[in-house]
Image (tube, rainbow, N blue to C red):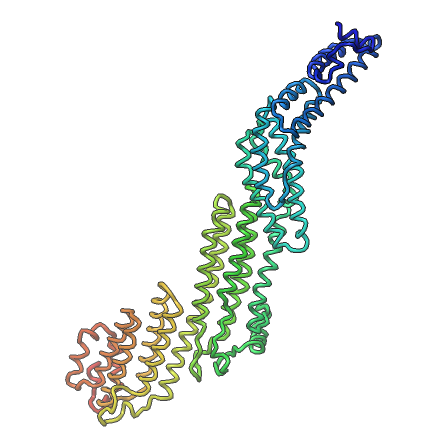
Amino acid sequence: MKYFDEFLTGKFTSEVFKNQYKVREAADIVHKLHLIAQELPYDRFAAVKGRIVSKYHSIEQELLSEFTEAHKNNDIAKMKDLALTLSHFKGYQYCIDAFIDESISNAFYNRNEIFTEITTLCAKVYKVILEVFAAPEQVMGKLVTRIYQYKLSDHVNSKLKEHRNTDPEKYLQHLYQLYGKTVELATPLSQYKLGSDSNFLNKITKNIFKTYLDSYITVEESFLKEKAMLISQRFYDSKNHTKKQLHSGIQDLKAVITDKTSIRFGISSSSDQNTGETYLSQELAINLLQETKMGFRRCKTLSSVSDLPGNACRIFHLLLDYLCKQHIEYAIDLGLLAIPSSDPKNEPNIYFLDVVQQTNTIFHLFEKQFSDTLLPLVSSSPSYSDCLQKKKKVRETMEVQLDTGIEKCLQSAIGWMRQILRSTQRKSDFTTDLPPQQQYTNACQNVCKYFKKVIEAIRTSLDGNNVEAVLKELGRHFHRLIYEHLQQYSFTSTGGMMAICDVNEYRICALQLKIPFVSSLFEVLHSLCNLLVVAPENLKQVCSGDQLANLDRTILHTFVQLRSDYKSARLAKNFA
């Protein structure tokens, strides 16, 4: 009551209130008096209550000043003592705030290393907090919050606002790096057990980046569109090609292509067309794939779990549009229009096979990114099947276009071989009675030379099972061509031998296809040609031979009718 009396009179005579070195003892007394004063009626003790409150705040301020000074001097023991004393005062939070402010004021000199500085500062300050404060987790949580809300938030905003409206590429790069590093920062900081909320760091991180994350995919989509358009335009400019929409009508398209490119329709007479421009670019594809790959990477980091599949699909749709539809399918359409007719007057440039090869190469790159990068982002969502269906549809569309183009190329190649035969095969090659002067006719030699060229082009341009399927189709067409060609002539015995020589050479060429089915067709055709030279009396026996026994007798009869002695030798009786 002695100290209370002093407050009643307003005369402080005790040493504890006069000696500045006894401020902590005085703090204990004033704290207790402050608790008692709160219970006293205001009307009778207003004056004394006012003096106690005044002294309470005075001592509290003095303790805070001493704490700040001790912190500056790194006097841990004194800080601990003062913090314990202040813990009974209402201004204890000011003590924590002062400690945090002082700790932060001497850090963050290099803003480019802010994340390293944060981890270094927290490790250093945490040791002090453990020694000084009774509730270290609470103080550490407040320190981290202050760092995030002020230092880190200012750094993020200054970095992102610099490029947000001027350079979307740098903006997205900075956003990806800053957010990624901030998320990674949670790992070293989580060791300090920052309060009871396990999502504490995640929440304050989201608060800093909320505005940027909410608008992320819109910026990403816009940037990738512009980038894709730029990459595409740069390629077509390098080819001096003005890209046009293909839905305006076939005649308009022909006019555009004829005007702007080396492509000509029908007969491939233009020397410029020999360059075989495919309007496909692996470099363009790689650039587009690289840009979208980085987009997918940003998408994975910057999208919430619920938004990730949808955002990834938006990037995928851009890639599907600009690479598959606007580049690959466009080039295929141009290539289809440039394939020479099935009745060419000059050797056709069937460089559409190069379109096939380059399409396969580019689409394989696309499918690899699809599997490696996109599917993991959408694997557990309805978007998974949606993406698979869209890719399948595009692939099937391309396959139909390519199959159509390959068939037209084969028809054009066969048409050219037909033209060779038509222009270089003489009737006298098969009607002469003179001994052969060469192993096979000039027509056969020219056809075989071109046929080998086509085989090489197919093997160079296609891969896998496609090679066998196309070569089989080529062989089938080739056999039909030679079969029908022979039907146009009449053969003497010597001419028949020449035909056998020719067919044997065709058979050797067909062997290069390495397709048993085609080889067997030419084996049978070679056997049929024997009917042109066999002696009349042996004709029935030859028709019953292993190679010909299973053939329709109409076919055998048709070949026998090609003999020049068919009527004179009365060979029809063998088929009566």
